[in-house]
Image 1: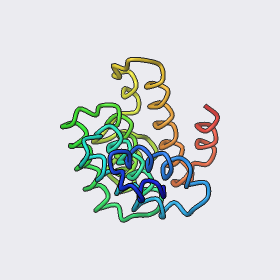
Image 2: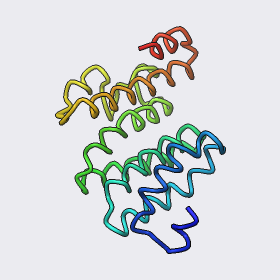
Image 3: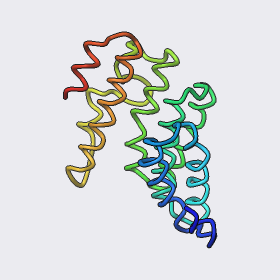
Image 4: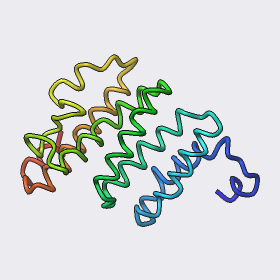
Length: 170
């Protein structure tokens, strides 16, 4: 990180910061402390043309923001903006990976018939994975993990502890 600052290496900032603040720092620092560097990674990635890592950073930023208690109304607006940009920049994997996060936020706002199911404006968990035109098993595995994680999280938040435990075992 000090080398990034020392050499003002914005062209690699998104890649480094998404790794450090999306995978490593969460084990040693409060999750909220990752939000500003992830926002910087998004901005640096977009300004240098590294849209892949800009939007992978956005995916993690939105998930961390949701989990850390950022107000849901403004956060859903940000989610819509990033979702639109992901599509515009043809970042389909980041867009798909972020879909369960967006639906979970909508569920928390009461915008789903069943708050513990990822079914609503953004997705239907029953058909979401069937409609993936992935180019490999890793994509499907990543998306399945995201769907299960956010479903388990909603089950836990809404007091369905046994369901959450069952989902965690899958």
